[in-house]
Length: 178
Image (cartoon, rainbow, N blue to C red; front, side):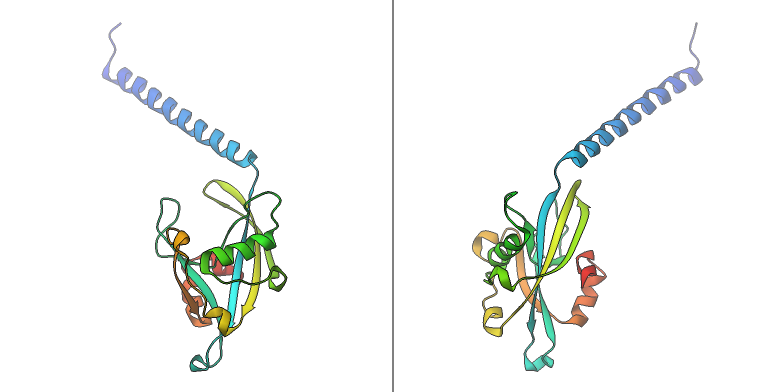
């Protein structure tokens, strides 16, 4: 039997289809394995201050920029936050710790008001998120800075008004909860 060009093409297409199906099956298995892992627990802190008289005393929100990495897009502002370090760490204490670690603002855990609970998916993992809000004084707001050990993760902490947040909202779903 002499194979025709059509027969050779059919065999090539079958091999390519089998390879594609095998890759798809491996990807589905990875997704299933990821979904069986425990969800990542994390907290976000919406840190507010009453703005100075120069902007009419309007409330402002503290945001930080994410330093570019393979996992994070560039140029996107987020509120401070992160993962719980251990299973035993509460969301509230994780929020307090992250606020101190990322922007040097120290507040007691009791001042953090729980505002939202959410679940989501990011980087192939399920997240359980708890949001907290806190209002800080001008004195506390003046201490905002990124410690040297966090400068590879976050940068450029700044206070934004509601109008500025609306612009960011179009870029980042993190602000949907405001």
